[in-house]
Length: 92
Image 1 (cartoon, rainbow, N blue to C red):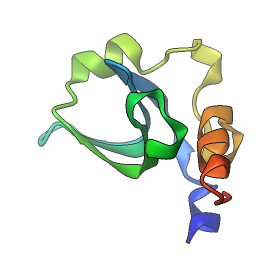
Image 2 (cartoon, rainbow, N blue to C red):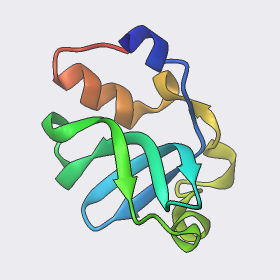
Image 3 (spheres, rainbow, N blue to C red):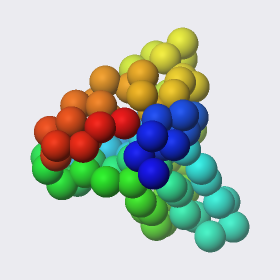
């Protein structure tokens, strides 16, 4: 299953407090985003999942954090995702 996730396209990064969401999908009607979530900046507390209450404004302000040319890219090419997954003894 993880091998399939390596090809997920990441469209941007949303920062909320000390958490990061690397955005793969967004449902504007439900303000729900799916992607790779790193909670509290802790690699051991990182997983693929959903974040609720993500507004369009969050995406517009932070969706291209790190520079416009950085996104989109495959999950396996995002160093932060690879580092977090590898630290848990798993691999993309």
